[in-house]
Image 1: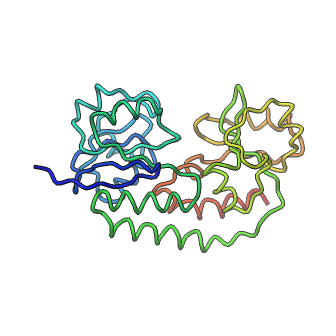
Image 2 (image 1 turned 135 degrees about the vertical axis):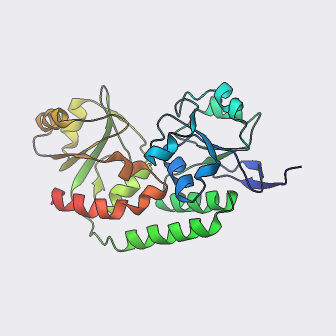
Image 3 (image 1 turned 90 degrees about the horizontal axis):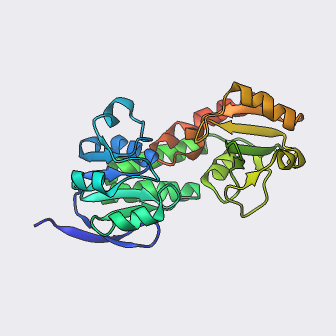
Length: 264
């Protein structure tokens, strides 16, 4: 009989999980990459179609659909003993459905410290504590060396078009902007507000960052935004560096340092 333990996830849910899960389904791209970087790739049996890192390894895992539209049937066919999801990225009703049949551990990440806690907790869940501890230390040291002074540049970070949507202050993206020393032009306690062209013009940002995901902003969009906000410096950025809160955080400080040199 499989030994189990009770743990609290980041949503405060008490979940019964195996002491050493062997068949893991990850419903979050950044957490899928984390599992592989913790040395657990051979235990990951399922992932979403958006789980693209590490590129070759994830191809060996079965896709269960998207982060919002994964299907119970595909998950059940894999017979997982642990499912890892996220409050923001996964549809609540679908999570509640799969949780009737399988252990589901959920992350809830807004701050940098939430991300580090998630890495540690996933390490504890999977008996990869040492690897998780080393990873957290590496990330902390990388960000500590970043040392970028706070900028007066008011910045708008766009994640979607038609309608335009931006990352507000109550988001992990906002936390990464702060690490770059950038000031979010949006008002406090905002998540992902929709903006019209008139709104963007009225905000009058110094910098507009166009994320590579979830909307794939292209070169032509830089010119469009420049017409809307003529005084802004418009740059396309790697969205993974701003919104992936797993092991990819190791790469973020170097990317941010280079990006801030382009912003000036």
